[in-house]
Image (cartoon, rainbow, N blue to C red):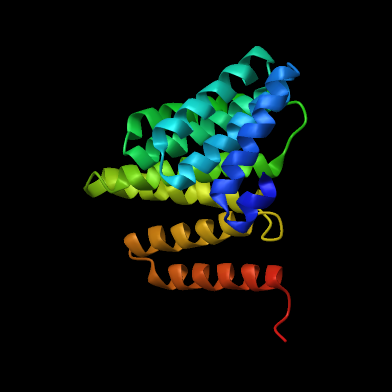
Length: 204
């Protein structure tokens, strides 16, 4: 399933994910069921089917809560925040981000990569909020987005999360431009390009 997602073949990924989910449901493996639902949520989100994505993420969140898995609760709350953001439901996106953040401190085995994905989502929500207001409130939200992006940067490696790093630097530079900090924005674009070029390896 993940191989299909990585190659962009979302239809085959969906079929493989549904097959895996059926097997894990029959085997009563709730942890793997939760992972399957999360993956299917990701696939449906990328297919633009927000209702199906929300259903799968919500089921994954329910399973995570039943297993008292703070890491999976964090992941699925951040995922649901992304769906709500795509739907333009910012208040709900903020609530899911807050719930995800509340679970970070409860995770026993820290995972900087997954935590960074949560911080990235918080930054995206703050950036979206800023577009709906003016003046000092807009400035404050844009600055808040930058603070989340800085926290995201610390835990993301281009080798591990190429697409997320691409999005991070793009959004970060965009926010800096919106604040009128054009030289910093240019430096941010450059840093992102260098990080991604390193991940791709030297040019032949």
